[in-house]
Length: 133
Image (tube, rainbow, N blue to C red; front, side, top):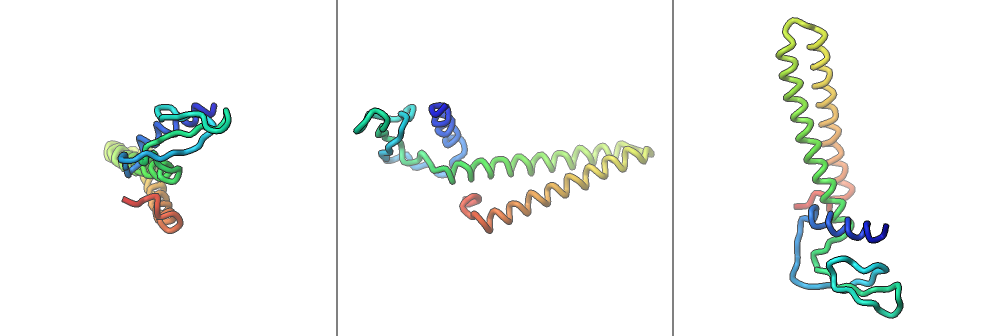
């Protein structure tokens, strides 16, 4: 299980990190050897010293990248839902039930979009490192 977590953290960090500094290597001590890193056994059997690239990233950068990615996806989906429900509203014709149904979905989508933007403002106030460029 530990190896799976380490491998997934490495793969996710390569997808979500915004800053890449691959020039130097950093030595870290871990309990499990890091895949694709130059690792050797240190003082005991359960401590390994590994050389990882300097751009390996931190947990904060990883979560910041994930939050930015899902915020973008949620905003794009909400715009898509508004467009689709606008088309459904215009195609409803004289059927008042379909018009109110599409209008309610547009209003709910706008409310979720506003909530998403408010969460962006709150996260910028609490943890500004998430949305740095």
